[in-house]
Image 1 (cartoon, rainbow, N blue to C red):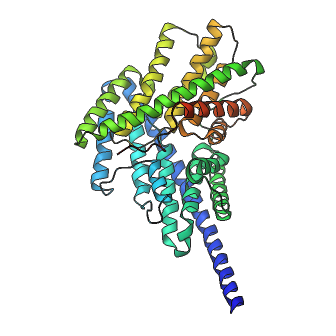
Image 2: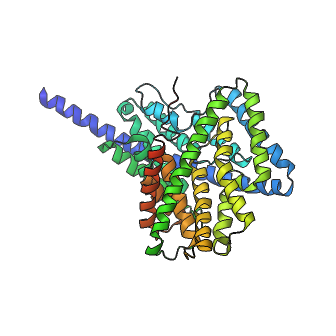
Image 3: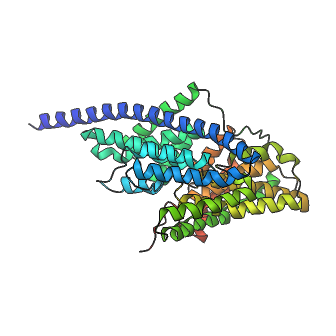
Length: 425
């Protein structure tokens, strides 16, 4: 009898493992396909609409209102009248034995994330991709009884595969799912993550996906390390400003009862911000690419200093308003955007007033990683994600050190991220 029971248990484990492997392959491919499709569509339409708005300023007034209105319409009549809560939805799902991410979250985050960014909402598609990919894992878990105990593993497999495809970095995908979502490892967790990420990475290699930023990193100098540390401290402070903006503005918008009022107020703030600083449109990667291209030739002028200070001040506000008025997204893209401009401003100031002779591009790349690390409290994710984005590991050591400094600084000032903060009732 004992032998028969033992054999049945072994057979059950074997069947579970086989099904998990098949599910992980399917999740990896589906999440990668979703992430690449969303990225390509967003890049294509954002570029077209941004150029149209640049040519005719009236479109800066129309686009945000139109985008938020369409998202509201879809939510009301197609997606069960439920608002998207971002990564908090994943925490609610993995933290409860009964709660799941429903299947409609896949198209909901896909289309809402796309519409938010292409019509000027000042956020990114990263969180939309993460939640939609997590929902793929959750749907797979729901389909098989043997997966009841493996919800977190399959959800994290979807997330890791989505991040891998989005940022061309399998290590970033694995680390993000661990540092931010699960924070615990099991044998099944390692198996599902490894398979899903391998399939996702294989898919983007097959498509010959290029890095998001074409950046030439040549070297870095030890004499710049004190300045890197300063950048880490500033990035930590900057990320806390972003976090507090999101939390405060969301709480204020939550007091507005009518959603149409939220849309009108939100779109007006976004529109006037875009008229003032068009660099804030959408993800802002177009502006980051432009300064990467011109970084070595930028000098500190009154106009440049005022523009960058305006960006650093306004970006967290307009991102918060975008999210609070119904837009879909998170703090990934805004953090990297802020970090790039913060790094450039610091480098230009150091070279102008202190003859530091630092390399501006290095400060931009390190600033992106540092601000992201501090915003999501995940230094290793930020490290590999940024190195994956530029497809270069020359700055690995300074990025690692600065990411740890920025995260620690942010935690000392304010212990929460936008994901971990729980409003007091």
